[in-house]
Length: 249
Ligand SMILES: [Zn+2]
Image (cartoon, rainbow, N blue to C red; front, top):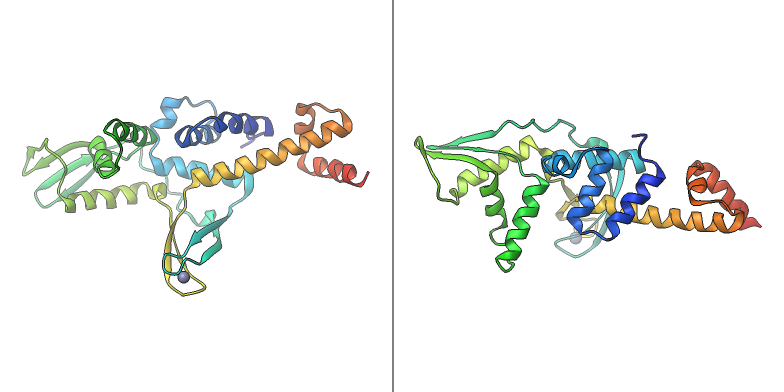
């Protein structure tokens, strides 16, 4: 990932500051696929997108993530390390429709993408909020064909057990769409499920990195009169060394 230079990262960060969660996810994803347009990025299945975000994270900050969670039973604040190298790297099946057959039901569907999430969220806002139907709306968007006993079925929602089977097949085909960690609480011993949302995680890290980097630029520009591009072109090691010299002076 040679293209992940400081200038490109700062540009993505600057654009992301004025953006919402969806926009930030898109900007971060574009770091994984330089040159891809928004249409291409928005049509990548969610788990595949997140696998690519984990790869960006690994390239920028390493494979070890520090995750915080609150114990669901006693409220204890937990902090633990998670190794992203342990995540499944099986690529998501390409564009082929997925299919489940349960009892007399046959359903063909595709994996949800960021475009689907955005469309469902927008429709929910139009309908006056409330997320009760978000999962059902997402499933309806991603269902390509539903048949019962060989006859097309138009009215939704699909029965619960069919929906659960679809969810299971989706999770199998796009495993990183939902990275949930099971952690045991050190205080009470109960297990808590913690969701790891790589988009917001990586954004928070990029934000902290960008602010530190701009501070470095400020200090070095003040001390030496160098321009921002000149300072960003220094290796991290040299930058650190000059900063130490400034601090000693
Ligand atoms: Zn606990």
